Image 1: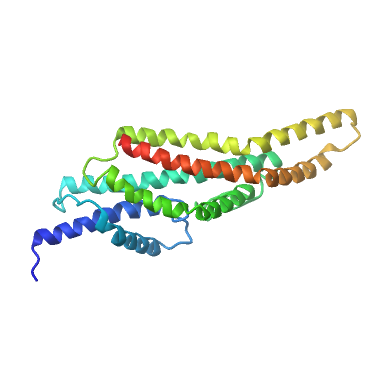
Image 2 (image 1 turned 45 degrees about the horizontal axis):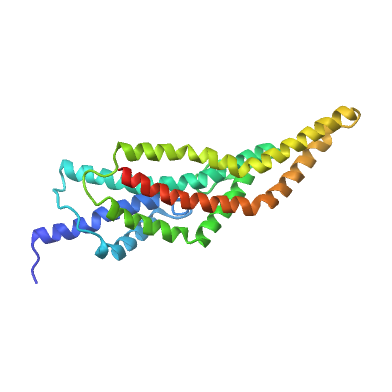
Length: 258
């Protein structure tokens, strides 16, 4: 059995370009990009996914390896994969932002711990929400939906030198502002309740000046903060699930805009 150079080049292109896009998504997407997962494991996962989905993908363009078209295609594949992972990362960052606002409201802003996903110090409340979000994401099979979404991008945006354009990038940047709004919506019940509690303690301190409000204010605020987190837990998880679904819908808009 003999193979021509053109056939070998076509097989290599059909495998390499999807591999780049899938690997870029795995490097940027939440859960897949945490530091506890070695890079070699992520690359092996990208290779296995590419091997499984490559037979159903459309043929890749055959271009010279050291050419401008090849460089443009490479940049486009990295941009598309990273854009999808970045959109999903924003959903998790919205929850982290909401947890930080809750922590500062209840007086736990000084209690920080290492975030395994980003490698930075975040309040313990934000870390608590992040762990719950990861568990909820896995229970919803979000990781499988994310892999299915990156495979669908090869139909919406076939491998070519022109893919994600300026309009798609503006859609992507516009979605980043949604993170702050979603985080505030999740934290707003706790913030308003703690504000009312602080107003009540202020009234008590005015009515009874001899009462040391600073000695009892922090324990009350801390205790009520934990109670409010427990009460609002189902609603926050439901809001996060809705945000994840909205993120997948927005990713389709971003890719179509590209």
